[in-house]
Length: 307
Image (cartoon, rainbow, N blue to C red):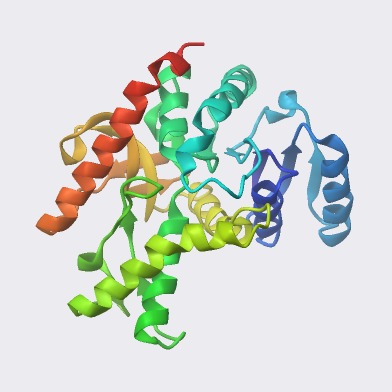
């Protein structure tokens, strides 16, 4: 059993993560933090009734002490007109500066899972500015892989009983790289026609814009909640498990000084290994371009990295 703290817990992402985690039996203490204390109190009172055997409470930054995992979902509110996650960068770095200081003060050894956007740059910001170990930091990107699976199932009309593994690497954003070469159905390689690939890509490329065009001021809370609860489960156990997440590269795939979505091995000690998969030439080219995009954004916004 572990202690999980969520910073930004009153918002859509934070509240849905809290709900999905609370439904699992591997967490018995949930510390919820948010600047909107009234809304958070409303959530906490509801959670207390829904999960009377668990310890769920509104905390302050001091209550981060003894956290096994800290999930950051705090950030500027979602704006419908925005079609790129990088639009939130400057405002969210200012928020992350305070959060990083508080985690360093009260829970410097905790594993930190960042779900705020732009994930890759914010994860790198925590590494660059606060001295956390690479193993402690994971940028949450599983939504891309879940969405890839949804698109595959939709286009190919795959039965729900079939197990699909559908990894997406690269930026958690427009330059993400769906790896058709590594898609598995029931542990066997799934082969696509050119037409199928094109239709699946079209679904993926249009999804974000279509979602925002609904003009509803919320983000993908339930998808994130489901994926975050999976990650938390892996991070509370000794067993080594393969997943996808944004991590700091140290020469893997030929890159360093960047955080990007790659296959990683994790357990209760955090990120243990970065797996270097063989990629098809087109996938490798797209991945390289995605890394360069993140590195360029980091360089262009270096002034924001200064505390």
